[in-house]
Image 1 (cartoon, rainbow, N blue to C red):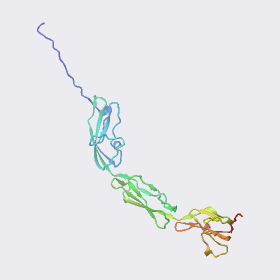
Image 2 (image 1 turned 135 degrees about the horizontal axis):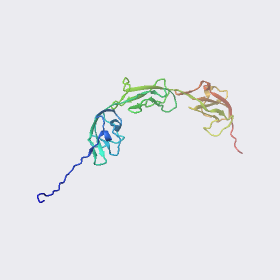
Image 3 (image 1 turned 60 degrees about the vertical axis):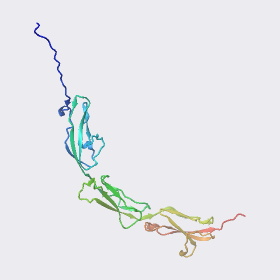
Length: 277
């Protein structure tokens, strides 16, 4: 019939991205107010879900910079972050989530003492190791010179970094001290004394007696039968009969053991030097 005319109808349908529904795929789903300690890993504290086929969550700071996997809290007080969903397609989205983390001082274990409180003189600086402690958050200070044996204690000072750290044991002072001693060493023979019983003069500075010790030995000579007061460290050059004495050195830092305290003596002869004809 001529009474009707056909017409076309165009229908536009807008398809919005699907919300990243928690029950379907998980969401940031984080507690928006959290607590942490100084130097804690940021991402571990916030706890974003793992990346999946739809996309991943990233954490950004107040300036919009993405937080790295190894980033740590370095400022005390409140820090604000934003969890942002990065979709792999245009079909999904999720609203950003704002997270506030309140950061307090890191509670750490305090050192409990020294690895060795009784030490022996070595001639070098002695610094015993520190026992216990977290290994961070404090400075270990040794005496400037802890070398000589002494009846007095040397002290190691542990200074807590109070700006960012605190002891787990709140009864402890911020500064701790541990004492240690350095005792005299025993001077021992390294090479037992020996003597060339028939010594021919060679040159000034030569010794008929030979011996070495941990902290030294004094070698002295005198004419056989002469008073001990005549002992001298210079080897005689005049042919004749002599006595050599070996004495282990002693002082405030070391001394021979009782069994080695008595000097060792040998008699010997200096023969005239033979001159070829």
